[in-house]
Length: 277
Image 1: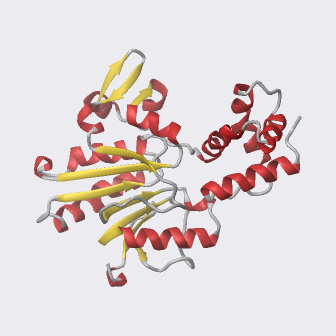
Image 2: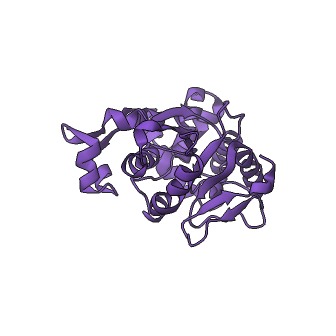
Image 3: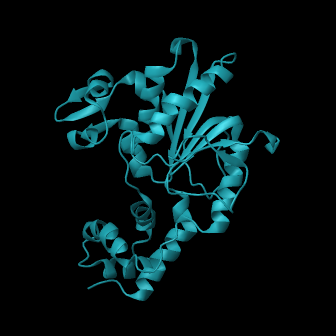
């Protein structure tokens, strides 16, 4: 039994109200795939029956699990490579020069999933920031799904997960083998603080950020939500700071407070100086 239109509408409205993510028509297959494990966990024979139980209130405690299942996105170490190359070759050297007096960097991975993105950034800083021991580098990493944050904090990944993007040289340098898995070394884990944030809700108090990474997130929101998040991000970024979006995401016609980084096609933007920060 596939889910009916009322069941899809219920999940769509639940997810949108709690995360801002918009499930467009035709995504019924995605709901089926993501919620099937939850239906099995609840001992129900189909996703349709699972949704009906949710609507009746008998599985109310699982609503959070539904939202997490529908909003957890694919990730990997050094995903797509090019954004991290630009961070290494352009963004980090610029910030190292302009923040050289304070020797402090604040970075926020605002949709970190299971942690590969912030750990990748931490490794690049460890490898390429001169005089690192004299700097205070704080990487904050957040997601709205508590389950993926548990994985991220543990910093433990399967062989398949580290095979996806992690160069062998960096793997043996920054990970230790634990059974068949690999665990991020303590000096890298100590650079990253994980916490739960729903971008649609009030954000916790944070310092101004030199870099905010928000890759492949805006594509799931409507235009009004995109604009509101971009405005909030512009207030959270320090003067001359950087924003990374997905390479296919555009803010053209939505918000004019950022400029694309020259000679970069991977989604890097820089906050315009005249924004009054």
